[in-house]
Image 1 (cartoon, rainbow, N blue to C red):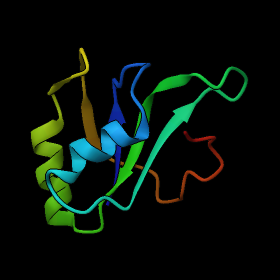
Image 2 (cartoon, rainbow, N blue to C red; image 1 turned 120 degrees about the vertical axis):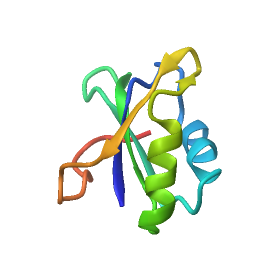
Image 3 (cartoon, one colour; image 1 turned 180 degrees about the vertical axis):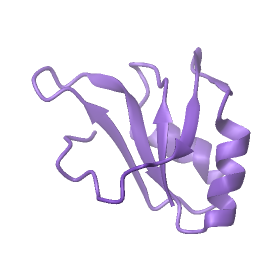
Image 4 (cartoon, rainbow, N blue to C red; image 1 turned 60 degrees about the vertical axis):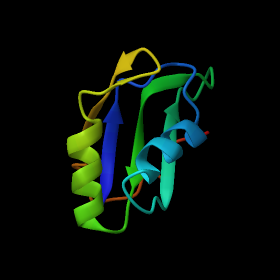
Length: 89
């Protein structure tokens, strides 16, 4: 399942989110979305977990959690297409 992760801090890197979500199961992909001109983190990311039960558990646990000084919002991604056109870190 692909999840939208909003509210990430500008210092957050892929490995930070991978460690956070991995507490709930296997993480196959983390993509932090960056501004195409500046390369700065845009404050959101996508995280993919292959097991829907584990992904649901991660969403329930992490959404609303304070992480690196920010409150995270985690939802099932509304997009059915990949986000490969985004520049990721």
